[in-house]
Image (cartoon, helix red, strand yellow):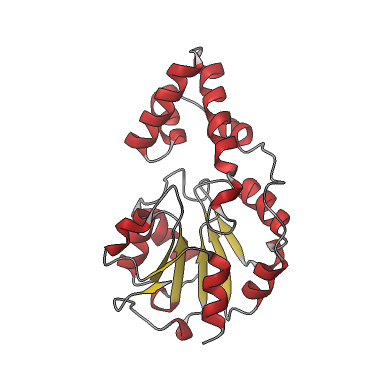
Length: 226
């Protein structure tokens, strides 16, 4: 694990612990996103009447141009977001192993625990139920609450802080995508990048990354042992 001197406050002063969901609360090796990825392609193909190859090209283009595939479908194709989210998040979560160790570590954190995800509350709850940690969290802020404005759009971060009465200089945000930590850093939060094979922490040299870890559980346990 790598710690950086740009941390705006001590972790000992933290009373809000904010976690991304996918590839953060569970290991990226579970590869749930591959299921979602396939479902997105199938949805686009069926809704727009195009073949799977063109659907995948469109899926990735919308992601690049709009931040999420959903945002592109809403802006360009009039797709209702609930229809999309219900379809793509209807996946098998059994690759995620229940984690009593993660539950134990999270339960020892002082203050509130929150999830901020570009997914839906339904998806988050399904995954967190599987991990065995849902009841430990004080709230979930999802893409619907964000008015479908995906991370790293800074406006929903400000809404999130207001809704949950978060004091940014006493908060930590944990993510597996470096750019999604920039607005948190700008607000004054400490930031933690969980390094995955999809999002290598080569970009972690940026000043908005204060801590880098390869595994959430290991990082939490190291924090609790201080």
